Every structure is written in structure tokens, then in C-alpha cells.
Image (cartoon, rainbow, N blue to C red; front, side, top):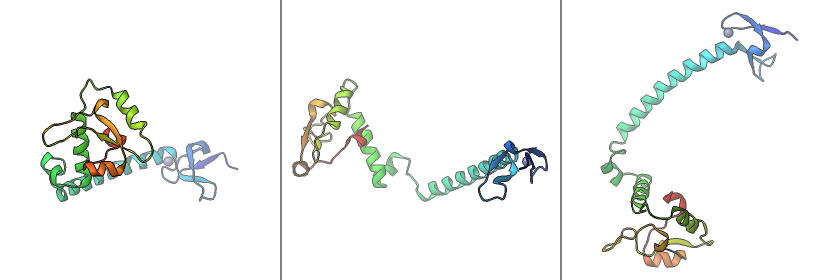
Amino acid sequence: MYSTKTCIKCGETKPLTEFYRHKKSKDGLRGECKTCCAAYARAYYANNRDAARDANRRWRKRNPGYFTREGNKRNSATAQAHARVRQLKRETPAWADRKALIDFYAARPDGMQVDHIIPIKGDTVTGLNVPENLQYLTPEENRAKGNKVFDLQTVW
Ligand SMILES: [Zn+2]
């Protein structure tokens, strides 16, 4: 076994510890030394960063308004879900006992859903996302009430 190896890139002879392992090569090591690999990785990253930026720009062109309030209203279900979470957070007053809220969601019995007794966005009154305004309902009861369903993930 040789204790040194010559880099195919920079031509320097270096200890084997200066080469990364590579299963498919004969000696089990890469042909380029670690220094050359690092330089390559840096260049690769720089190129890809540009490519990523271009792709991002193209995507924005294809999806105008995605990041604006107006765009969110008519765009994807995901964007609408995000808007919904923002709304829910606005309706969670600072004085709400967040721990109690989380416990309430976490303690939800199997098959039950968390319901806002007074809907978060009612026609005449707006309920708050506080423990006192929460109850457990079966999916059927919740549907009968005509409410959307939330789980903890969508809230926090
Ligand atoms: Zn090298």
C-alpha cells in the first residue's frame, strides 16, 4: 500500500489522508486531492447558485403575484392555507395561554376535531383562538356546524 498519491488535478504528491475515499476507484480514493475537491465544490456551488437564482426568477415570472396579498387570494390552496394561519394567529390574543392551547390541541381524543365555539371568522361575531373558545367535536358534528377543520400544525 502506498502512503502517498499524486493528485490528477494539481499534480502534487500528498499523503493518502489528503484524498477523499471513493469506493469505485482502484485504490478506494478519489483522484483529486481534498484541496482540489474543495475548489471544485466551491466552483460548483457558485455555478449552481446562479442557476438557482435564474430558476427562481423564471418561477416568479410564471407565478406573478404569488408573494403579494392579492396573489395569495386567488392562488394555490397552499397560499390560502398560509393566509388562514396568519388570520388564526391574529385572532390569538397575546394574553391567551399558549400552553393551554397547545395542551388542548394535543389532548384531542382520537377522531375528534378542535372546534371554535364561536367561529374565528363568523358573520356577526369573531371568536378568539383561546382555550375558553375551544371544544372537541366529532367530524360529523363539525361538518354540521359548517366549520373548517384545524389541527395543531396549521395553527402553530
Ligand atoms: Zn490536487
